[in-house]
Amino acid sequence: MASRPLIFNIQRFSTHDGPGIRTTVFFKGCPLRCAWCHNPESQSFAPQLMVDEDRCVSCSMCLAACSQAAIARDAAGRVRTDRARCIACGACVDFCPEDVRELAGSPAPSAAELAERLLADRMFFERSGGGVTLSGGECLVQDIDYLEGLCRTLHDEGVHVAIDTCGFAPRGHIERLLPYADLWLYDLKVLDDEVHRRVTGVSNEPILDNLAFLARSGAVVEIRVPVVHPVNDSEEAMRALAACVTERVGAPRVSLLPYHTTGTGKYRRLGIEPGQEAFCAPSAEQMDRLVHMLVEQGLTDVGLGG
Ligand code: SF4
Ligand code: SF4
Image (tube, rainbow, N blue to C red; front, side, top):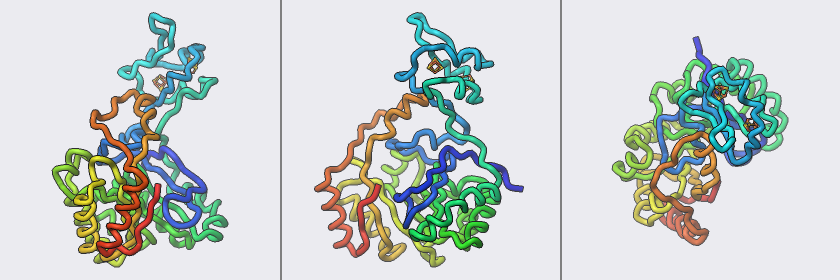
């Protein structure tokens, strides 16, 4: 029997997660820890409380809601949350008149209920050539019975299904979804395995093996590359990546996604420290150079995304 994953967002009318107008379901939990991650609330498999203390007016409305005594005033009279006591129950969220508190991650409805909710936007999908994208976190490491049931229902209803994945997932899960997925949005970061381990916490070997498997299976794949200085924006790193893609997949569509800093404030709201490594976005000229270079390497369908 399928167990319910956690979902931290359902984004309607998205135009960045595959063709047309889409609804993207963000599942919570990921086996990678990308050092530049702009959705840090997607990483843990557990619910997490996010508090924007900069906007807190210390009205104390949330204090009485907490059964764990995790919220208290400090010596200066400011209301603070003790993360060590917080069990992320979410009871304080609705008490805050300033919307300072937010719970990241709530149990998904049943696969049938979620499919029904997603199908409510079918008209937009049909008119725009869009559909549903399952994302994360990492959707492929969630309960596979749940995912298969959801994808099968959407597929049987004629909805285009895209899987947005980092590729670090059990092969058996990929096999189960192959019959129902129309598009695989496949993230590649950097080929050098030592660098990959340092910046993501895992080896890229299973990722590259799964990519080759998808290509052999005839799946439609779009490669997505977050371009992060100084990790992978050198010509050498991109040439290696291009050679790997052409060898394994041929000439799929490739989207280069420039690094951005929009997630920085989320680390603070989660009460966690971001990594110490400094990253920055490549310039527009650098991005253009990389696009041209990948085209010269035989990847004829290269664009900028993000
Ligand atoms: S999420 Fe629950 S435990 Fe945590 S501060 Fe709010 S009420 Fe207290
Ligand atoms: S209810 Fe909201 S604004 Fe008031 S003290 Fe709590 S977090 Fe701050």
